[in-house]
Length: 295
Ligand SMILES: [Zn+2]
Image (cartoon, rainbow, N blue to C red; front, side):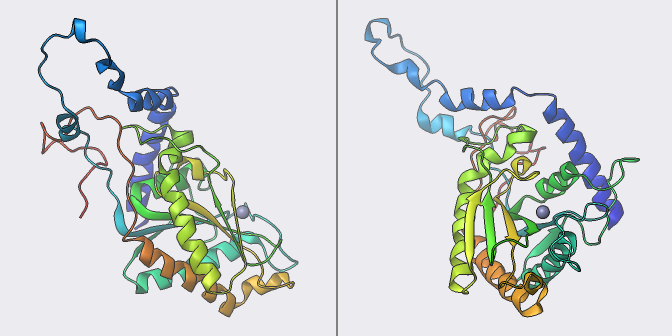
């Protein structure tokens, strides 16, 4: 299990480093989205017959869709090991709350037919990079992105406020995902889906009577995630900060989230892929990257 996971992480980190080496990829993505649409206007005198390039033929050679595994959810219990996160009370640190909530969510999601990928399932996890020490934020993003999940939830906890705080990225939405998304802004293409996911979770939590705050925050590694992604920050149930450790409270929150994800799994849509070296129409068997066809 760990060996498989570590090999996945190593492969992903390689991809991450390649992406970091191409800092202008985001600019290329914007240029690609503008495309050749401005060519056809008002030039009748200069018009010469051309092999027709219609909208439909452009679409027919478009890159293959981005794969989403509708029944896969990534849970990232934030912090862990030497990073305790927030000191919530004399007896509670954030890293323990996030892991406990992740275990509850995993049990409920598994019971509903999901496969759950957790970035850590114990206090301290080693980085897959030899000698790198503990699992890094980039390691976590690598695990998450490899899963092609319907949702990626970064679990945090805070002693401030009550209920649940939902945050999505502060990045502006990009028109689609480039073949090699820029590592630090990869989430941009997924912002519309992350917003819809936020709405689904917000509705479910509110229906369950759980106080809710929503906002935007670029909490690492969220901006590097290529999936609908949110920070889910658990706050106390009431004025007693240790109420966030109560089993019934965590179960109530987990049940609301799991129910929302069940609905979400049928709605999630991948963004467009903006460019591809090997158009699917000409090379139907050539798919070698993460692209693929989903049901
Ligand atoms: Zn935190």
